[in-house]
Length: 510
Image 1 (spheres, helix red, strand yellow):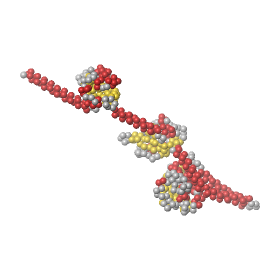
Image 2 (tube, one colour; image 1 turned 135 degrees about the vertical axis):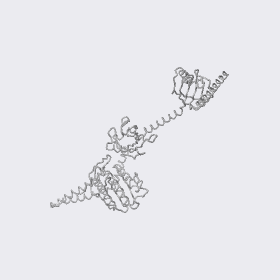
Image 3 (spheres, one colour; image 1 turned 180 degrees about the vertical axis):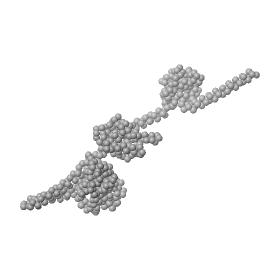
Image 4 (cartoon, one colour; image 1 turned 45 degrees about the vertical axis):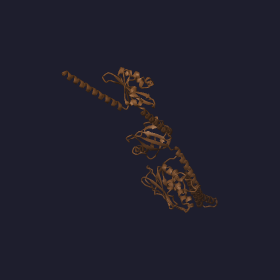
């Protein structure tokens, strides 16, 4: 009886162990089925003892075609030979060392080529190596995406290198990280010379602070307004460049660096200079009659005084008066010619120096005086009570006033009118205002008045460059220009320039 009970107990335990073993086997097969990789178990005779569903699906085979077969029967013979799978599995059985990170290119019948990374892992269920697990991970898509990413990266790098504009990237502090071919061509500096230098260090010394401020501002804005800064090239030349800066953000939206796009303005400056010269020639043509009239008056005085001096028996007093008249008339003619030369002088090499704007405006108005008189236009010039100091180019500012005055003359050509010119100064700006009582500008044309070659004058009566050149001159002086107009009532042009910070307080004019 006791023996029967003992036997029954043993039988029950055996059944329990079998049940547990069956449960573990089911868990094992469930685990293999859920792994997104291909898994094979190979015994020491290199027979396949287990293959998961992932492998069977990708290889398009059944368990009966794989289980119990030799490893080379599960793969094309060329793969086993090329990868030396048999030798490597034997080595794992001998050494117990895992082999991982190897690449396999496998093409099942009727399928496209796939790329796998495979590992050979020793399997020790009872402490000794009984099997070797062949674990294959399909990395075809990762490799394809990596190739596309590298292709996109090469394409982007090619775009940046082929760009005609300067494309520079910096870190958050403004230190240069990348420097494209256009930047090297414009400045003469190779990337190795500027990497990790602050971008503003390459600017002209007087403009470094302004560029540094814009670099700091770019952290807080998506895009900065264009800023024109002169860079000093490796050869020592000053190159005008217009910069636009934008922040680079990481995946979390934090600013990781800056992108600066710069455009070389050298050719544009040359074109603007040519346009200014052409507009000057047009203005000189308009003023030619007035200048001749202005010079003719002192010449007539000189001629009359000279004829008197040729007479005999003149008293000493009369002779002295004649000499004084000749001297004064000569000075007058010389002043007119000097004003004309200053207006016509080329401004290719602009030099911004401290100057009093009052005589510049007065000389420009004197040059157009005859045009005002001929057009029955009354001039109302309201100079301030003292000198108005700005930093600028006298010839360019004189051309600015002349252009605005001649535009006003054209606007009042039919019926005459009044030209009012005023010059005022506040703590932060100098304001020049030129107002006429002409026909005004249609509202639809106001946005286009600064466009080059836009004009409402008949063909042959205007170049369409006066206001566009005036706009460029104001921009060069870091100022602003604005136009308001009422059709049929007149137009007012307002120019605001920064005052010279080094100038003394307003001086009274005697």
